[in-house]
Image (spheres, rainbow, N blue to C red):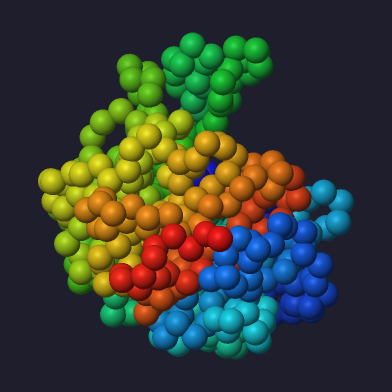
Length: 416
């Protein structure tokens, strides 16, 4: 999933932040964007697809500007020796791929009407920064003294930022090959043949601050985030915040991830899901009346919706691994990425009505020739296009594309 990929990304960044600089950046032409494509060109699959980047490294996680005129994304260069460069850059381009510009060293851009909020490594810590949409006037907002913090989520009125800081508790968990769990108060040294996974216990504090960086307030403490990040999401009316928390217990060896909601000041915390397995990556509908999320286990994640109070849970997909989704701006549709294919190493982008009906194939991406990974997609503000990043294991490369979304009365299948 995208969250697991984000963990890997953070580790890569944290190991090499000495190379990173916010003020003096290398040439974007030389270091971030190279002209030689390595992926199979998806424009051969449909006349409705446009390729926006041609990078030998990784271009990922596209975000549309509010007017739909620009796309912001992350870019990690290829070193040419079988791995990515450690630094990651925030770049921007026009919606047709022109006027490509590197803006800053950093990750996870979040946009307001005239600002970009992002996180950047300042060894050995990660902090939140803000800049103008053209990359000028960069300003550090936090001095967290924390090795991990999340990408910020912006309040709908653009006045506040919610974020978290993550820290080690001093305890360690070992998941054995028989699926049992043991919690240690010291770092254990078990035999590798007996261990399925091992890691330090991590908790998080959730904070809100003004976009100026002032008036920082802790609104929640001691959230368990050992396996998954909180995935914060502000409601469209600005009154509530969604988050997720993982739960480990020696009595319950299954890793649980559940969705919670709280008021924007941290009060009235309520658990919205409660079952063995993963309920994760919640997103509000544009009107705030529904929440879409993933639910299932490591081998099968489906798309579900529920009301903000946790009632009226509905399963929208069945029997597939679904890794990313987004509401259409008019709330009538949900686009999602699925492995529902005869080839488990291929991927599909599908669209369905908000109640799960009328599922339509938008794009089928074959293996390349090995496994294809797609973790995120983003609907344009006018609902006419979907931007996505496409990664193939065998070439260790990803690029950003947009695909046209057919009107309601048109043929929904765009495949040739």
